[in-house]
Length: 144
Image (cartoon, rainbow, N blue to C red; front, side, top):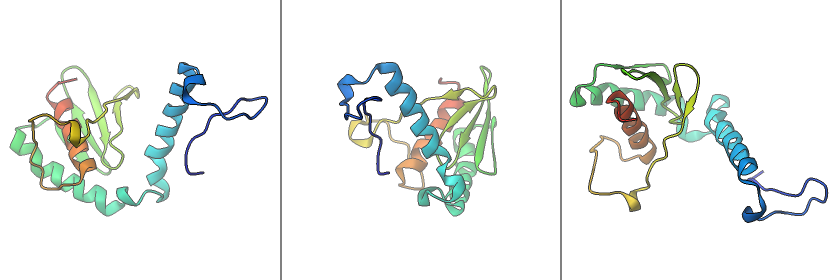
């Protein structure tokens, strides 16, 4: 399957987005996001290979002192953040965020064409790496 399609249950007639109830659309997109975010575990996503996660972990470890952040540690494929409000994990492959209690936190990146004048000079120009490091810095500084 190359995408996600919606159809009427009884007739099979394809539905356009305007015809899909908001709650149904939201729940399906949540399931799709979950499937995509964990697909790397089976080696499906080449962008989140073991070496990519190792590189992001190394970048994180070198970036944290620059921002004077001592409440973040990187272990395996996750960054662990202990902040006053809560504790979080950020997956270094998918950028999925979870609170310590297991609740998923959605933080949507703004694509570069919509970016303001703020620029974070990371050592890697990969947009996913910049997204992951930015999420970690925001969480570690209590900006959520």
